[in-house]
Length: 196
Length: 91
Image (spheres, each protein chain N blue to C red):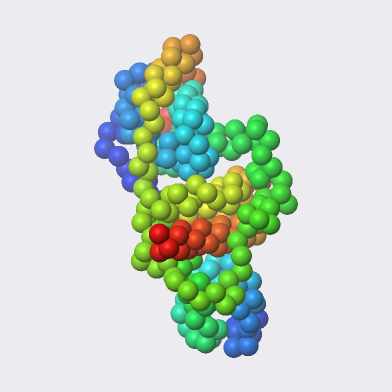
């Protein structure tokens, strides 16, 4: 994982929250709510579910903060906890893409196309954040999970394979297909804009 | 990797694109790849995929949950008890 610099006042809030101080727990919530919620939203693509699971992640934090031993940065520990909450939720819903490796594959219709001989526009330098976020939302769930975990959140393939109970090769393959599919989605969007 | 390098001068687009996941993972500099020197289409593909990955790394968490989420957490905490704190934190 990346992007977890120390936050001023965090350690004090952790220490006090471990002792049951409600105000300190609120401070930890304020520090990390945006990152945890954004993670849930990107993994799920659904506001209501993302809010439910943000709530669940922080409740688990409240219950488990006494078990945080400082082996990793607190934010790393909390975000892994949030990822696990989302994955548990997906498994409970029975979505196969996080339980059976062979069914990680989206349907043929959802998959990326090989790009042979299609010489038109390229994307470089032309995609804004909102457009990319929207394209990620439109990825098939199996692709979206791996893409968000690897390219956005910075997890390594071995970590993703462990989390999703699939092989490292499968994680790599899903990531490549996700990027290819995103390229399709982004180029299609550009063509529509040009026509309009 | 050795096999890929040996073949890259005669690679078709399909072969190159099949090898792309491993090429990306090896973090090799693809700009000098023989196939890309003669194939604008695959060169554009590589540029786009690298661009997508680099833009994804720049995505920041910008969404805030609604205030109701904290209200629900507080309600649940009132009905909950924390686990006893661990004896020591390694710093």
